[in-house]
Amino acid sequence: MHDIKKTNNQEKFLNYSDAANMIGYRSYAKIAEFVKTGVLSSYTIPLSDRKRVKKSELVELILNSAISNSE
Image (cartoon, rainbow, N blue to C red; front, side):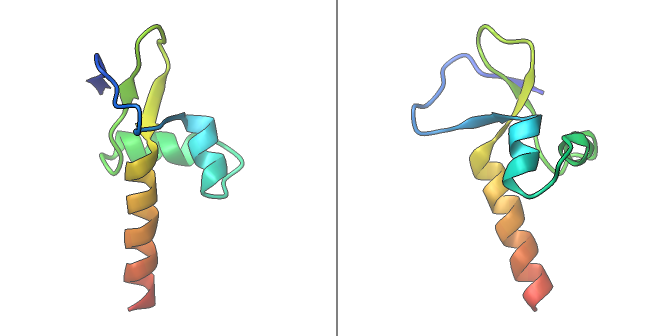
């Protein structure tokens, strides 16, 4: 897990539920599994104990998955 001290205004951090919803899952369990297995990194943001994932990393994962499945 990474701690974010200084966040870039352009980077979005999603909680696990929002990340799951973004990719079509009803539960955050798949996101937690991705983090546990190292597929995604988790981050903490200031003033919050909850782990987050970077939206850009999630989008990259989905795009890479779509490209691999289409080949």
